[in-house]
Length: 502
Image (tube, rainbow, N blue to C red; front, side, top):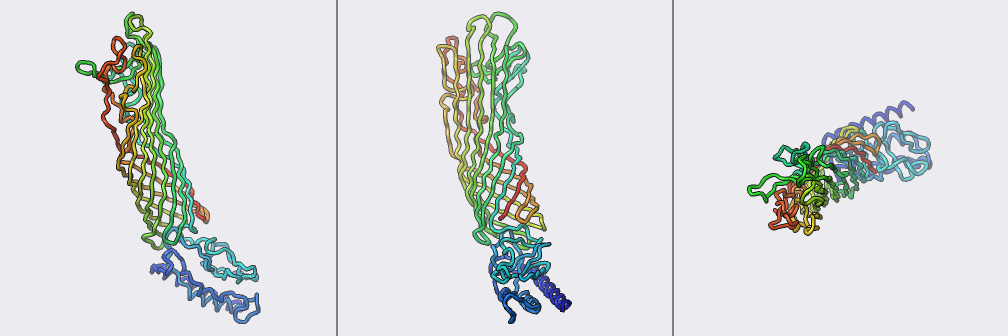
């Protein structure tokens, strides 16, 4: 009798395995969509392992009951190919059998089919439960993930923001030489590709849930740490000259000039020696918030492609400041005159718009590879704020406007239509039923971004900076406002994450 029972069970297993493989290869689709391993029906469950089946006493099951009704149920099962990352939370009694976890079907009887376990789940077992439901279990190894409708992704971002530029802000040269760019001085801070480009750490959180087999909603938030650069130097000129270079439009033909911060000509009496200090700082920050929906478009055995659509918000801020103080120390006219300059510029970019794209995922065993490509389209609200001033010797006193910006450029705004393509490639490995570790790469670019360094004008007249011989600022005052300048900006880098599904 024991041998007969084993042979019949083996025959039922082989029959079920052949049917499932054929259905998967043919891409069978049930009425409940491609996500389901089995059509959601109770036809193959009714009566299976019920108490008193085939006339047995309540709470007892005969060997023939197991064989006959199991064979009948297996022939009724409608297997289909699994598709995608999501699936319905089955409250029915058919679910994958995990390796090493045979199921107890009551009365101390354990049945392990090797691939699937069958149980009534509604009082068919002695304790009223036959173990976890489908929603509490995972699919076999060919499943891409053990998802049950909810997901949460936590990622550490190691990204590089694009380098940023400005006009030359500080120049240095050897002692006794003028800190002017046409006199051999070098740019100590500022200039082309002067700021940023450093590795910045950040984080990204992405979570959501499926409303049906085909449609889900989610949200995402990410931000980078502040990317900053700074410079500070001072002296009396004996160890080197320090200046703030500019192009002087007061000169008859125009020429390079510089505000002397630290300089000593070594000649003696005159009006050339200055002592002072200068400091400058640039900082960049960005964060994003998104809400989206995902709709399944395509699917097959071990892959899924979703359409992504939703709302996007980005905040990009670039700050640049320059502070300098210098005092004339050489005996002569103007000895003791003190000049102070403070330039502070903030470029703010607020993006509000939509996003469309595609998320494609393929899986094999415990590995999952996903590719996200989308574009953000919308309005970029851009504002350049100037909180700068100059303090000159009397009678000029405190003046509005910094070195590189006019006094009427306190705050200027504009709107710009902007698009931002984004791409993300991610490889994940499942280490537990509902946990995966991932590594990926992200690239994101905005085509129109306002940056502080791009909006400084170094064409300046000397009178604007130091006043005339009587300490009065004479018109025309330059620099002049030439309109807001924008350019593209990108960030990119590595993502290290953990995906939790529940």
